[in-house]
Length: 145
Image (cartoon, rainbow, N blue to C red; front, side, top):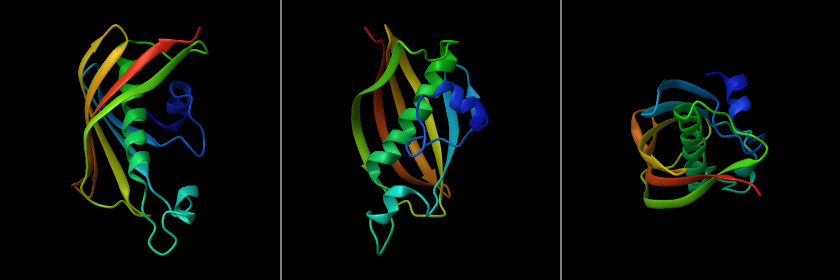
């Protein structure tokens, strides 16, 4: 899935779109996606000026965006103007190494279960084969009323 297909599936836009490409998707099971981390990211100016590091919350957000792509694919649906996909929980988050400009963040998300619009995922992001972050994510798909 290239960036044009991702833009059709996710409502996020610059500077908050954090998935550049889907490398692999196993319908209803897992997704592997890519985030290219560049020095041009707006957060690097202040986090941290002398040693730029990608904020951990944005690594988790990138994983959640990949999870959304997996959820929409599993349901054979696309988001609509009256639907929103929320973070509902983050459990057991662990940050193992910093992510810096020039890194490629490989996002791995596995769907553990889904029921009534609630999704539970096991997620991790790697850089050069080393785990940068791992967590369990809970997300909810809800109609906006």
